[in-house]
Length: 128
Image 1 (cartoon, one colour):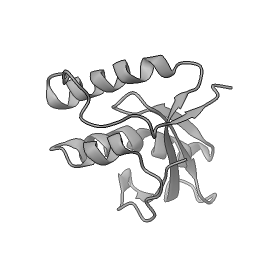
Image 2 (image 1 turned 135 degrees about the horizontal axis):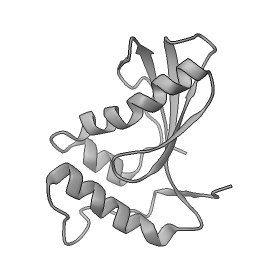
Image 3 (image 1 turned 30 degrees about the horizontal axis):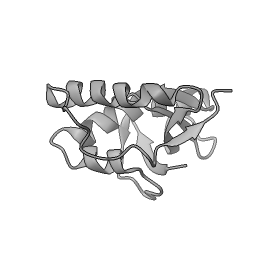
């Protein structure tokens, strides 16, 4: 499972301290204008919720992927947050391409006719 670790304080997140296992479509999106900011916005609310509630907060990112954020240590509103994902529910892999096209449309203003990268390395996980 892809993993990112960010330090979050006062609603702002720092750099990704340990990027690991990212997928091709996420690498592609981070190279697009506005891509990293869209990713940060998607993680932001979940990270703040995870810290405030001191428990895992699932979320759907701007590309339609399932992800989760969880506090690394019980610290309150400031601390390290682990973000796991993206993943796709194993019960609905057919929806992945449509979700990604919709994500590109929101990010770019149009949906590409063909996807610019493979989705083969997006992890499938059981919904339950």
